[in-house]
Image 1 (spheres, rainbow, N blue to C red):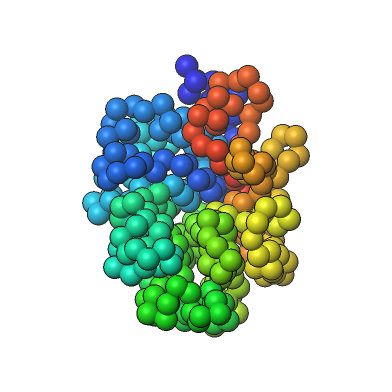
Image 2: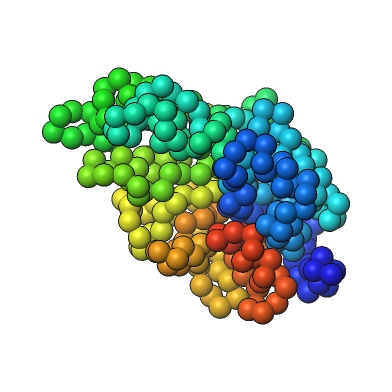
Length: 342
């Protein structure tokens, strides 16, 4: 029933000359390995709600946060199968191993222990918990993709690592192996109908849950700033054509905790444009946390040379089946931007 309503009420199909990019923190992460695959196969209500949201918005390319990674990509493939059954086919997937749950055998958060979820390269109870993935209707050039997931934090130009009066926090040895990405940073080339496009995607750490050393706040800042460093030609191969930054920055430009300079710099960068996707009421809210409130933390920032023909935050009218699906799926809201060639 709900999928019939989706097709009748919200087709929102991108025109042939446009490409719809979306980013969506699905919050599908589970508490143990294999549980997400189990829930997908069982028809879990949250999974079905995520499927309904994606079918309603019809992205051509979507970056998904909060989806558990596994070595064979079984959970992602199972989700893609569910989408295909609902009429939305993504034959191309990109999901290398993220840093979430990747063990280090070091005490990375300074609590004196070495085997907790905060001692992994990125927070996680198991390898790949709440990972990152790209689904695409168009071919992905995996051979030329750039993966900065293993970049050491200290090796990012201009990096600011946590310090205390005693020295590097939690230790010099920990900082020698600490990666920057709490999840991943990828530059994914996609061959689209409007030409080659490089999708720059990530999921930054929340700038909270730390101490006076501000470890997570500093990390969030540098995870966002990585894109500016890349565009400046100081890291990896700078995009030569059209590109889009899309992902969960875990940072609002004005509200909430965190160091705002990196997100301000990214939004003000003239090489990018900010379409400011909004919901039908005009709000830019992309997530609502009970303890914090409504924030804008998810972004799609096309390169300045692209034409933006539409954008939005998926937040249907209250009391509708699609609103129920959006609320069941995630505290985050899918955002989308339609782009066209110059």
